[in-house]
Length: 530
Image (cartoon, helix red, strand yellow):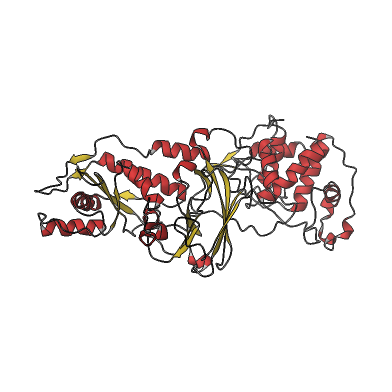
């Protein structure tokens, strides 16, 4: 396998070429979480969780709580709060929602609730112990009724348990409210939460360890999202999602409408073997296949919840989720991975935004593996982004392993440009020319016919056979082909590099990176000969 140097950084992103060879069907697969957040790579997720671990072994209390008369709330350390907030924010980042900050006033109130839980029922509305003052009880009741609560978990670890919402081994189907709402999770992933508070206390009875998490906050700025899911789309650590844990998808109603329990259906597909699970209002077994729609305001409302009953093993590899019965289809993919193996190459996929069922999947793999195209950073390929002239010449420069440049083209608009070496090299070797008046227009979109000319010129520079010529008169828009591009398009069409779309050649049309991957794979295989 031939390797080339690919190292063209621009504004923190790897910039690569885009172009079109055919127009795909509408891409209905999308990503969960805020559009302001890029999807994380495996390595980035592993690093994020390593820096913000689920466990905490430092000092918990600045002041020890007192869980008998005289009751005292105590106070947790800043270090504990930093650790808890860090882990929560790591989960929120994986889900694609903004971070939160701990608030001391919320934490002080949460301490009252944690103390109450040690001596009363494990409930959001525990009863008042006979020896507890009204003042203390009212402060504590306000905390428990406005918090996620957890029993029996270590410090910080309880945050992970609140994401599961499995109801444990409850035998009363009517009592399995967590499964029906996944409310704890939805509060923790609320995009509009800006502040959080944590309380913690221990005792020698009951669950022994009790935590309160103040989550009834809407002070955050939020984010622009289509949906928020757990597990989130893209790469996802399999240890964060057990076999009995329900899936949840909270939708933005402005995009998908209000989900209806009567109309919504879900199809879950395991890509490795095609195994499918289908969910609808018929699936009411809390111990088997389960489905519901919850419209209540746990963090954000309008949540679709489903879980396979009999599940053979743990989640491994790629899963596709397809939700019907909304205003438009909602589809996304999740790849579960082992954090301990995250540094190993993924033989089936490299980018979180290149779907296994997309028409450009194989091409994206090919150009990545052959260093023809790189990603755009953070484990993404950006298949729907558009090509400009600078990016176009950069691809040919990389095909040549970025040779030394001895001359300057002297364009007035390229001084200091990130692609200056590629522009100078391509100009020096006849691959590209300017647009007139000493201008290169590096940021202008490149058209299909312009790219055909660049490929033709590069093939000529390399000494490849250029004798093939297609008859372009079969295309109704042949007359729109510029005279300077006629010969190049005849050659590119004859070689199967640039084809028509809906019967038209579209010489002036631009295209996407996914489409570019396809043409460049064919160019490398058919013309370069690899």
